[in-house]
Structures are given as C-alpha cells and as structure tokens.
Image 1: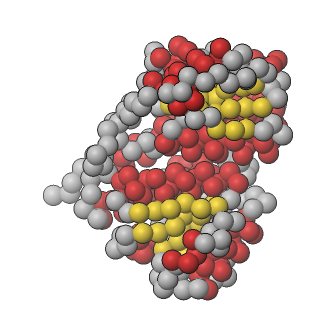
Image 2: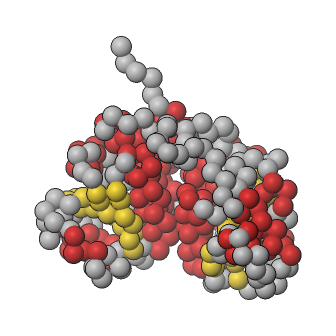
Image 3: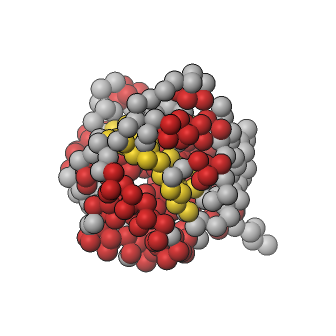
Length: 343
C-alpha cells in the first residue's frame, strides 16, 4: 500500500492554480494599491515581516531597487512592539507580508508606520486579520487554506502579489506578460525535483545555499526550509560573500546548492559555484553555464525577476522529498506551529 502524499506535497502542486487565482481575483486590489503608490511617489520603502515572509520582502527589495530605483530597507518589528520608538516615515511606502496577519509585532509596526505618515500595503492570506485591518491597502494572496506548517504556496503567492504591485507601479508590460504566463511555467517547475541534489543531501547534516540579487532571497528561503522540514543545518550566503570566510569549512563532497536566475548576476554565481566545485565541494547550480559545478534542470520564465519564483517552486518539490527520504514528516516540523505570534 502506498502512503498518501504529504499536505506539503499537495500544496506545492496547488501553486500554479493558486497563482492563477491570484491573478484573476486579486487584480483590482493590486491596481488600486499601485495607483495609491504612484500618487505618493515614495522616496523610499520599508518592509515588515518575519521568517519566509521576510524572504519575500528581500526578493521585493531587489526587484523594487532594480525596477524603480527606490531604496528599500527592512524595519525590525520590535522597534515599535518592544521599544515603542517612532520612525519618521513621511513620504514612504510600508510593505508588510504575513500569511496569517496575526503576529502582534508585525501589526504594531504597521500601525506605527501609519502614525509616521507612511502609506501601508499589506500582503496576507487572511483578509479579516488585524494586519489587513491596520493597512491602508490589503492584498489577498488568494492561496486558499495552507495546512502544512511549512509555507510553500503562500510564499509563492505573496511573492507574485508583490511583483504584480511593482509591475503596475512601474507600468511595465514586459513584466506583466511574464507574470501572466507564470501559472503555465510553474506547472513545469513543480515536476522538477532534482534527484541528483537529493542523493547528495539526504545523508548530510550541513550544507550551503547561494544566490545573488533577487535570487539570494530564494537561497535564504531554501536554507530555512532545509532546517525547518529536514533538520539539516543550512546556511545561505550571497555568492559574493561565501569566499570571505565561510569557504573555510568546505571539504570534500560538501553540498552546495546555488540558485542562478537569467539575469546580470548569473555569471557571477556560476563562477563561484565552479570555484567551490574545484575545491572538492558537491556543487549544484541552476544554470547551463557551469564548468565544474553540476548544472541542474530549471524552468526559466520570460523575465529575470520572475525566474526566482520558478526556482523556489522546484526547490519546494525537492525539499519535501528530502524530508520524507530522511523519515521526517514535513507537515509537522518539531517545535513549530503554523502561526507564530511574537511581540
């Protein structure tokens, strides 16, 4: 008798449909928020999030700076919730991301941002949540119920909601077209699960993930998921940083998973991947340009800023299998629960 697929696996397979639903049902909310942002013409953006949602914000930071030339900084929620400090945010956009919209520190920081005269936009899967109520504009992820503790489809849909907001803010037809075609690409991405990577990683206790630019956020999310679902110690580095010390612990067959998108940083990521492979590491990279590292299958999209969304989808398909191959239930990571509320 075959066992039923995990909830995590089922939710990964739902990603293309969830993105399609977001693009259909969420368009008017996104357009209204984008109009408000254009009217404001913010001088800078601050982001508020934790965990996987903070990795979404890192992705959107790079995308915002590359597309619009507007600087973005992450604000620690404890600035408001613990320390009660007031930030001077006049003329800024405050972008928050939270699947549940429940965590008191995230909500309080958004309220404080509004008191500081920021325009606040929240991305959440719960439109009746305190976060949605606190924000000037709330964007529904339209992910549907996510029952596995590990966020997968909510990560992807929040990233898509955010990049949609930027496409509308910039009035970027090329990016809009790539976003519209994402559901089809993500169908293919869910079928990629990197068996060669799994074979190298399953017996290991430690590894590195690498990225650069927008895809560095995907590296961060991947490292978190290895720890969360597989009980593997994973550290994420920018490929520009890994040779500045962390390379010292790389030994023969040390696993490294390098994420490269089809952008200006691809050659830089591949170069570092090849250097680490030459030192004996077991390096895998999502690029066909590698000489020493192993190139692994990947789905490129029609825009470099949507490539990271395809890459994380394939990663999720892979990491769920790593967990189950290690005898771990990916739906119930030890010591964790679905909604984490911090002050």
